[in-house]
Image (cartoon, rainbow, N blue to C red; front, side):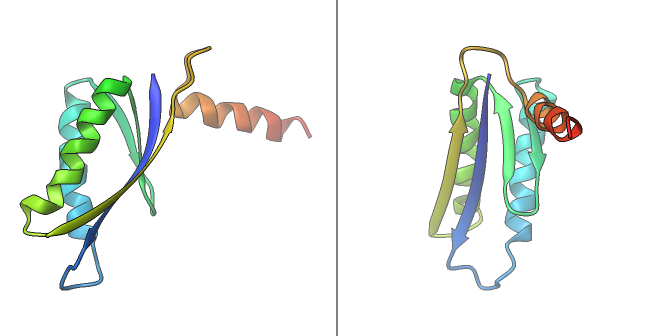
Length: 105
């Protein structure tokens, strides 16, 4: 199981707001989640997605293409991958680990 932090940035929009593009991407992610292939979490600055690495690359391709389907001619996508193979990790388990350390003091 891997976790990716991804930000899709449509360039050359007519409006500084990109929330409609973010909403389109969330619909795509919801479809993958409903199929049981990923879990995801929208944050104010990006989206965190967890799943099998091969599936995550498929998802990233789909969400990278979404602004092009809306007429955007240039898209920049930033990706950060956490692929830990010595033990199973999830978004939730990573947060729980930090919380345990916070509670120690």
